[in-house]
Length: 116
Image (cartoon, rainbow, N blue to C red):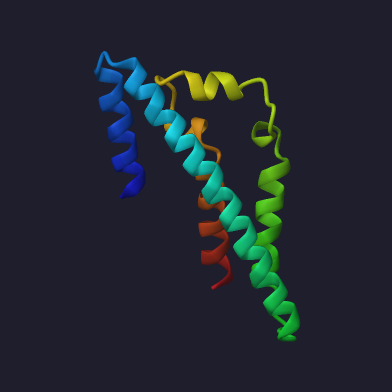
């Protein structure tokens, strides 16, 4: 899976002595993770509006958007968190704790499997 491949890349970067390359990689991945989180949020908000305008009795997308909002307000995901510098500057940290978007996508996947 993509997560396994990413974890393998992190392990490979740990084994290399090129910490500047690893740091640059983590910075790129952090930026990408933030962009993915923002796009998922905007997409779900659009789907909620479409669902509402269509008069659908279903609240599938509304529930998923609530999951996104819950994720955004959780303590470890706020901008300016004291761990932000540590997360992005250390090329030797755990992938899932470095990128909170992983937990967001995982919880949305679980939410989808429950509603279907």
